[in-house]
Image (cartoon, rainbow over all chains, first blue to last red; front, top):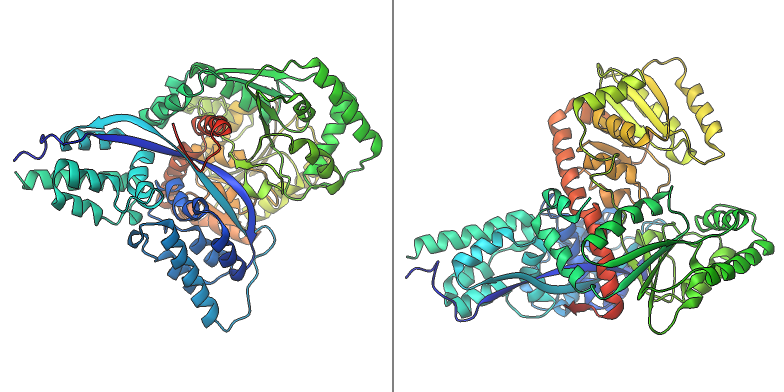
Length: 225
Length: 405
């Protein structure tokens, strides 16, 4: 079978998502305050602090996609906790609620175990909670088969790739990313869908992620003729 | 410039995103209002963004309020008070603000579906708010530690707006209306940022008798103690012990700052007779081109400020692929990711150490510069600024966490 040109049962409509940032006015000076505010803020705030850093710095390096980890280390000097927060495997979670619970548990375990006095952030170095509003719109591209899909992946904005890989799965609670879902159900290739689904997107730069997706599809279509 | 001109810098995809957003705003009239058409950052930004919005098919206009000098003296004092500076504020100043504010309200025609007011001077116009229009207040000032009496007075007006905009979460203050974050931007095609030929760079340097025989370290800033020019000279001297280099301290001759003469005197005294320190008072008519040339000719750009706003001079240097050493203050950490797109410092010794590292490792310096340009390209050019404003305009009509267009 020629997987390149096999027509999908439903076309894939690419969307893109841009972010508007809102100050919540909530600030934490200590780990205790951080964890209490994390419990209270909306999912859009948790999404912002676990994903938008990645998007803003996506050209530079595959940074740990987690503002909490960065602040805990750079401001409070809690390097062990920072590593624990940075290494939370976001791919394990299909909802922001689950991710939030893991972050809370990680910080509370640390607070329970630590014997040191509480550390305070200096004035001006507090953790500032920000909320991300997403504006989602059609990106203007539709794919009817894998060939078109790979071609569009080359030219669509990186915001579009992030939307389908991260935001659709976690923020819109679709359980799997949009690309894997379409390939599995509409193209009819659960095998390729599984490869896309098992990709660890958090450790790629933006362009690296784009290249990797295209390479996976190219390689798979070439070896499955 | 036309929006299509930016395509070669930011890519087709980003321009396409802008056109998608713009389509949804086609029927809205955007009225921007500030206090001056020339001079200052706000006028510079508006003069750049309004034509681009128009080019995207959006009906955006720009109006300027008229008021007497006394009023602007009062708003200047308020501006300084919002910045947290100690200023003498008295009841007559509040009275002047209110009486002239009423006159401005009477003289200014409000016709926008979205009325976009910049800074405190035209703030009272919000009293013309009706059910049919949306009001946005853009604060270009750091109000993190404002003088309380002035803040409480202005706050009553700010909270009549539908939303407010700040450059950084650190500049925001507690308000009962939504506060959005929109970072400033630079225009890659402006005289200060456009590509220059080698001849243009050499000609500009020759104007000041500077040769490129030794690596150049540069700080561009107005002569202000908050920019720590004396600290920059100290850092240069620590570098000079190991590397024969020269230092440029470049400031605008026309800076409207009464402290400038005193700071300049201190700098000259600290410089002594070192011929490798060039203190440049750049004429306003040459400022943009010369700053551009000096930044491009520099081996390292430094910004050793004690306090900063967003620090657009850093953005300009990063865009020119210069390795930058800058204090971790104000908006600088938003622009520099330490070790990736530049180096952050906290002390004179730290600044000197990083400058030496960069001068000794040109490959590392080149890589930082390359990353820096890419970071600015994605986050701090006019196109991103346009996108943020358009998103905000759309949000006013769809105040949701996730907005589907």
